[in-house]
Amino acid sequence: MTEDRLTFKEMCAKFDVTPRTLRYYEYIELLSPEKEGRARFYTPREVARMTLILRGRRFGFSLEELRQWLLIYDEKGTDAQNRAWVELADRQLVDLRSQHEQLAESIKDLQKLRDDVAQALS
Image (cartoon, rainbow, N blue to C red):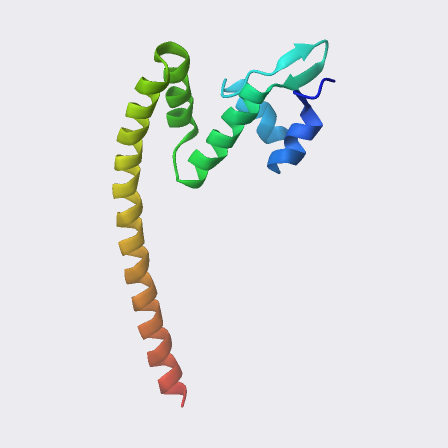
């Protein structure tokens, strides 16, 4: 192994993902490691893609959205990918804000119900 490539096991450890997750990301073409026989090696490109994938998942993007977004870089370059990112982020921010409002309302309702029951017990 060279210093700029990670093995399958090292990639799993670096990103704290299961082997099944890593294999699935390869299967759906989010990652394309170099293969030598049965061994897989992950270049800095794949490490960067994995960083973006996990960040995107944290923000609530689907794997298909991330796959399509990563394809834009390969097909059209950085500027087109960044424009697409802004559009995706704008849409996701609307969704997250809506979820936040719904969650705040649920918390308020649960707190009131909890307080009512606790007061009835006193």
